[in-house]
Image (cartoon, rainbow, N blue to C red):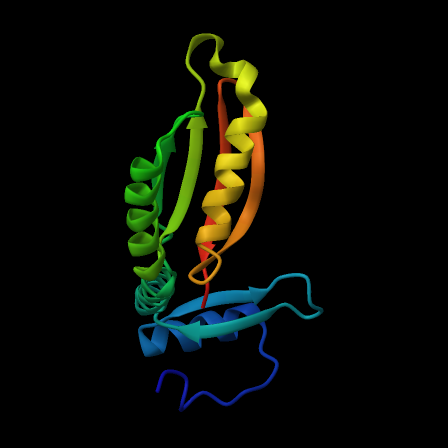
Length: 151
């Protein structure tokens, strides 16, 4: 391993540079604020490569969150409601979040309560496979609710 033949201890900067040069490695300052500053003799290119490799591995392990969107209307019929409900169940079983929104066209914004009732009915039907992450809230002409899958 790198630094196996180097005796740990306190060296002045010239001695440390000579040791690093003799080994064909780099002298890297680890902690500049310490007294005396802490340095390490390593292959810096290899160190950067290992660091990038670790970061890439960490990024690959992070879960990618998929959000599927289902759009309803304030006067959605029972058949359409059930059809979209089945899609939401499939999405939640696959592990995706479901964003359900009721879009109010024109003057249908006066049926806000009806839109909220539809969203709550939707959430109630999905209680076995998902839980509400965000309760229904009005944003402009649409009322949005987010449902996450149960573990």
